[in-house]
Length: 235
Image (cartoon, rainbow, N blue to C red; front, side, top):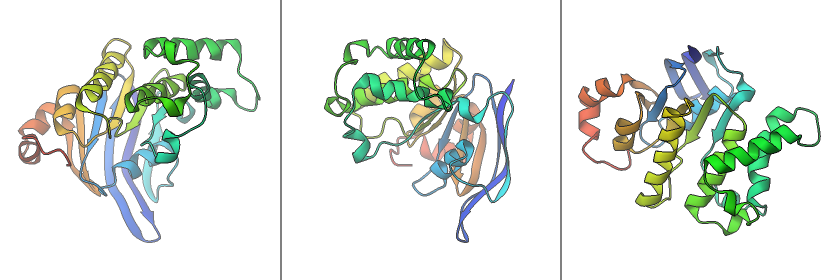
């Protein structure tokens, strides 16, 4: 079942083309990685999918999911890392899209928060201040927050940036578990080609426009995939 598709999507800013000619389809259960060098349009594309960037050409079609049903874990900023709230409050804020104009959270939403924290194994952090957590713990909290917004589709923008290799692997393993066991569809921006080849089933390689789109097996045997899979970190 298709969840969303992009057809010749283009985004520009004051005449500068940030991304163009992007076409792909996300099926239910996909683990879809978007790779490419810095400034290649990856984050711009993800924000266009979320409706945060206005597209100047083409279409983004939501087929099996509503835009308000998409969970999103953006790149963390310094300000976000120092956010003065409890872990529970941060995770609970993921229910905002489902609250509409209602100025309070209902019992079902609070239960959803408890389940998300259990899935991410952060129940013991519930009362702690978010700003006092380690980088890995903060990413788990933000992932739990994103899970409160969705049962179908999760978008992540470079979720392991700044994490040490052990903690990064823990997060990758959590995402794989959500994808394989709970059938959550994932779209992830990554600089880590090896991780993309290990975990994803589809890969899009961007450089303003697509250089490659297809299965990870096709990518691994493509010219660009063979050039980059040898271990470059900052692709």
